[in-house]
Length: 591
Image 1 (cartoon, helix red, strand yellow):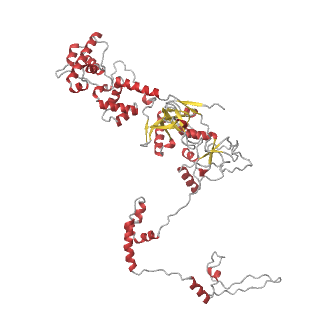
Image 2 (cartoon, rainbow, N blue to C red):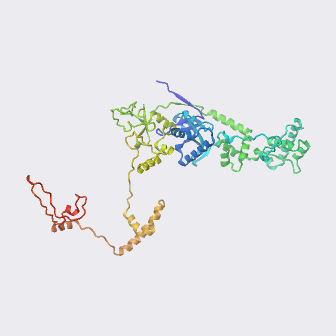
Image 3 (cartoon, one colour):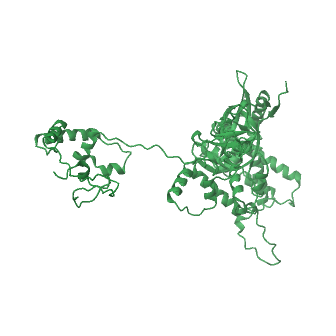
């Protein structure tokens, strides 16, 4: 017995998942590996979507975004790519989502690589590598929207600073000084380091006293050591050093500013401004969205500014609360699975096509074979590469289309979600073809392309386009009468323009009953009815039809055969029945 091969998968790996034997693989990123009560392993994954999974409107937005990136980048543009490269490049584009789902680990079919689109790298680099994908937009499945990824790498000319030229001696600076940075500290001050430290201690003491006088601060920091710790934060030190610089490092003047006439100056940062409930909301949002501060502000803290949230986050990372949560997460990570080994999937695919004897022939589509297979799919060319020989074939597309793919193109379809070569409909989009002479063929092909049906190759014996079964609506007699009798109430033209608005059939039925009662009292013009068959037969027995006299001559060997002579015909138009009129066929000339 041969040894079973296993492949290991870890969290943060990008993998293929198979949810259907005929559909392409799902591309997911493993976040966690959890073991269920039954002993099975489930993977909590982040979803990625292909172009075939989103609507055409969003695809147009994605193409517009790609063109904007091409215009700003200095790499290979789309115009330099061939039609085949453009076609295959669309199969490598993915859309990130914030959606999580749990899938069985046994459905993993292999690893792949997904990276954020690098604007400085050529797009051809993604085609040169197998199982490599890229993304630049974020897709929201619930809202059906596409947004730019906020974690994009800011590389390129639009993110670089414009360095101005050096000013010459005596040249004035014409830049707006209010937008430039302001000097707030001079290292060459007349004060020594010891004097500066003493002034900072005085500033902390003033801050502690100010918190004791403030009612809201005394509630939040009821103890002395909590007030002293809050007064020793960076906001107090920044205020003290800024006061020294503004007063030209004069200690007496700076100390008088710390305690003005109204009382001591109280400086508080975001850690003190936020309440306990706001802090718990922030921790909950951080657990859900991570460092996506825009979503945190939009869904949890809309009354806070983005600057305030970011400043609070970096101050919160210095607290004991952050250290405790980090330890809890580390303990949870230790209890979870670090790795899972999945055996190589070797079961046959249900879409696999086999010959009548059950063995996949090496030349299933070979030309010139005398064997006529019973399977109608055998003998057709590959729908992607048009190959006629392959060691294995797979049925592809709707069953009524009877299409198939070779082994190489089937693997490409499963991994990348498309055909290797552009189809006829995609070639028309990439490069407009000349106008078809027959308008019926042009409308047929365009309708087929709009419906997303696979286009049959020229090597296939039957046409891919099939006519749909015709149907008609059978109208009841009551409806026909109501259309004529109740024209004012029904209003057929208005109803036709609004086919989804229900018609008040109860009112029409009531009006028809009233009108029918009125019409039943007045004599109606009735059409003449056909007489019964017995009367017609009796009339024909009394008045038999007269047959025309036909002059016939006996043919002989001496005299040539004479033509059949009829009575003088009427000068009426001849019909299709023997090129004679109706009276000739029924013998009614003499009547």
